[in-house]
Image: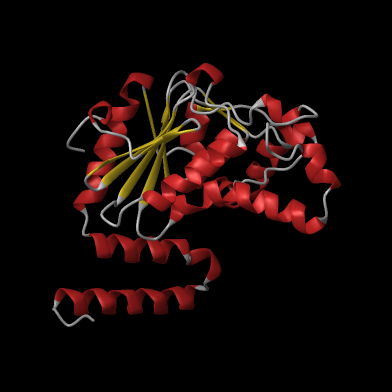
Length: 267
């Protein structure tokens, strides 16, 4: 990254979300540290908008949270009868028809889906609390760098709910079914040493080195040829849906495209 984020004019700055772009690296920051970056439907819409605003030149997206916590989860106002101003409360959602309930949750999920796009690699830098929706937002990214004070927890089941913001699929993929079930069912904290050991965190660093570690990783990712990285990411993402033989075929097809491109014979 050529410039510090503080020197860059934000492309987006609304509802607790800021987006800055520095050449091939974009940074999405949760900007409400006074509330430990608690989440709301307005914040989710801003995150969705950030994804739509990324120019084609962006190759890496770094997600970070200001203050002591990455995100302490859903804003407690969501659990009041009134909910958020201008938004359907949980009670309204429960009373609505199935189509309304499904469409509302689907809209919220959009904030968590674009981080795994084939044309970018996303990195969550996670410090302090990453609880519930905060945990799921970190899981939405391709990679995670954790501070040594991190505390992951999935509290939805303890509240009589389920993790519904796309977190269950990557969690099982990272730690396996049995451990994912235990983490969700108990709602316990997963600290830095365990997170690194079981694969939730790619790297653990002291909290004051979190941004620097993200910049180093982003620079390494940008250094790789873009089309080769896109093909590699697609191969790895598709493993779960392919047999061993199908993966061999996919590898051959991807390598054929790369060889033709390098030889100047691509489309």
